[in-house]
Length: 327
Image (cartoon, rainbow, N blue to C red; front, top):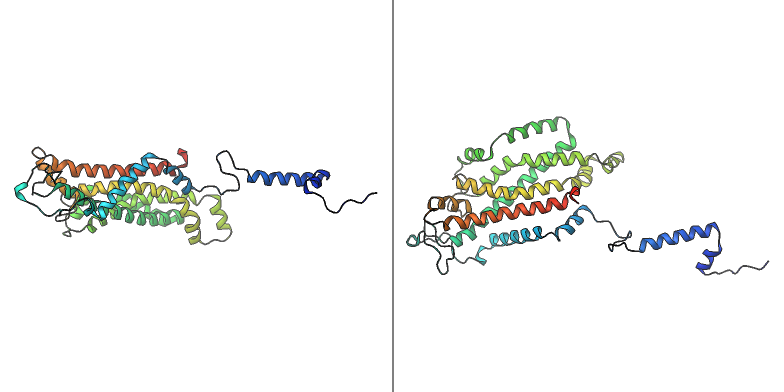
């Protein structure tokens, strides 16, 4: 019987063998298929996109997100550096020009005190954006912590927080602002921010509670618990990343609501107070001159409407990207 050669070509070896060669061939074909990209350019060897990367992929192609994001970026820039597009001082007024219309160098005209409406509209973005952003951060942080702990631990803590939440939901926001802020003499933005956080956290708390209850019932959380993971590890590593999406959506939409609420409280005289420059203050002072000098009201009101609309559009775009049911 002739001796078999000691060295064979890999292809001829696989072809000449029996069942073992068929197994090797199947394994070789499987390895080849893993390297072949799919029809969309992604193959099995590439990592699957997470919820966040998938959402960012959709947001970049959403014109609503791009438009609202550019508007918000512009508002944030002029809130931080209003002197980039307004060289005047919003507190410099000339009574001789009171209620006058557009003039060279003063495109929006003057208000009832002779102050440049354009300059005050630009500088008014700072207080409104500051109140909206800080109030949203405070509400989101407080509501997420309380609601997340209630949803995770349940029991008496969950029942107690639910009753407290019901009490706060029963308080009318505007009426509560009239009562609480009317006794505050501080002219800064902090009393208004504190009031919004005090009455705004229950909504975020309920969203966070429901998200955590849903997330902790998933199999990977039960597996982590069975493997002996601590409560803090399960809450921070497994539950929070998968429960935070609804909170972000609600907080983004609520930011525009808080800006509108600040303007409402300032219009009623209990929010921000002069000499602070705010759209709500300017709208309040211009409301009595709406027939004789409508430009005093239209510009700050228009800026407020565009800002609130931009944040609501951004929240809608984020919701569509993060909601798997809409895919």
